[in-house]
Length: 45
Image (cartoon, rainbow, N blue to C red; front, side):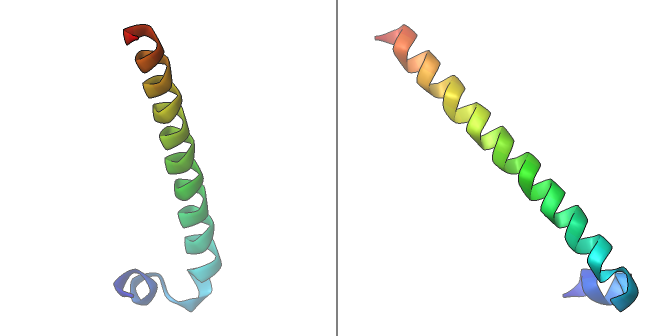
């Protein structure tokens, strides 16, 4: 809520785009982490 007030209504769409991009990056990192964990588990067993 504070971010929205800070950016103002004119930059709301830009703010949402930035949030969307950061969410995509976070999801990709989580997927990579899961893949690495699977690989490590396979090597351990």
